[in-house]
Amino acid sequence: MSGTRIMIVDDEQRMRKLVRDYMIREGYSVLEASNGRDAMKLFDSEGNIALIILDVMMPEMDGWQVCAEIRKTSKVPIIMLTARGDEKDELRGFELGVDEYVTKPFSPRTLAARVNAILRRTLGTAAEKHLEAGGIEMDKAAHIVKIDGEPIELSYKEFELLQYFMENNGIALSRERILNSVWNYDYFGDARTIDTHVKKLRSKLGSKSGLIKTVWGIGYKFEA
Image 1: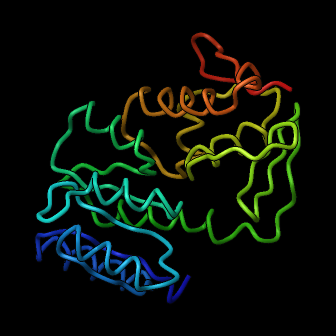
Image 2: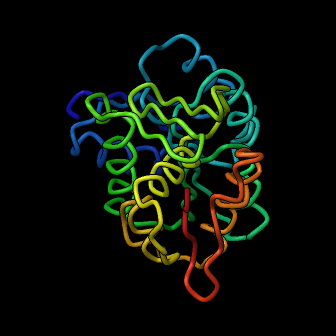
Image 3: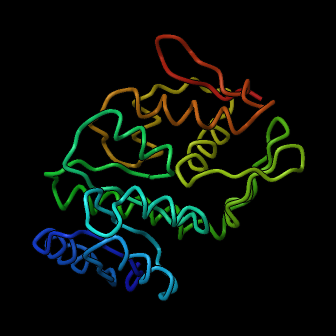
């Protein structure tokens, strides 16, 4: 993914440099902003930004506001950085459409692994086929999901989760297996992450929500 453009938004210069140097080492082209307002100007003026690494606590506009503004027009993957470890903050991020949530301090190698995993999925699906099950149609290349012919809006992570369920139709999947496969790394968290995303995905599937079944003591199963 050499040359793929990502944007780093953080008011701490040392943090930006740490992340920037590691991302450049991984082969990415990096744009930087030191506050939320500059980030929005950069996002609006620059094209082809494949992913955003976004700090929460910043002057001008905080990370929540930036994320909300971007989500009005774009589904670009967003990794949120925060010094907080509060569950309410994490859930708020998911509600706004954040794809990953990383608490400081963190390992640059781990952050790079998450960036690589997201971009492999978002940039590497052009040659794959459609999926269809139970009245749900998925175009993985165009990132479109339709229910009984009508398109629905899914975040990047909700799309990935539904894709994984549909590709494993009829198979009981543990939470750990879902996290490791959809997030594509060893996720050191608890079950609330997957449960939160499943709850949101079900709400967007409407009449098809029952296709995602809870398997007590294990996890979930998509059955169409």
